[in-house]
Image (cartoon, rainbow, N blue to C red; front, side, top):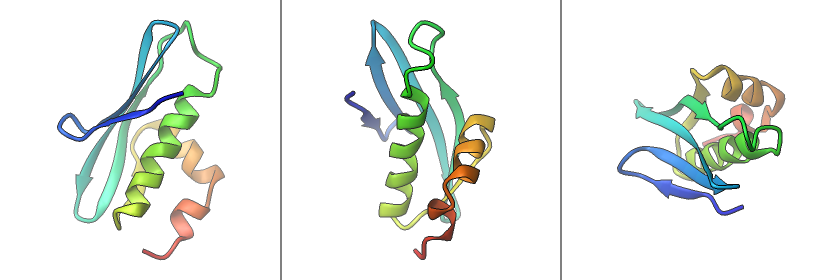
Length: 89
């Protein structure tokens, strides 16, 4: 799956089965906050949301930003992967 980063719109985007899925984020005071994770019903359950959230958190860490989430799905992924919150920046 190819995930593209649209920095202008602050989104990570992928297309699968003709549907577009994305994560929207905001950067503020040294944090990257995932605001929304959107995956259409058709490709749901294929790990798309998880891959988008992982890509976004990896981007945050590689750019010296602390990952956080307003989005409930992204928040649950962050809780299951403490390596994102425990890593020294």
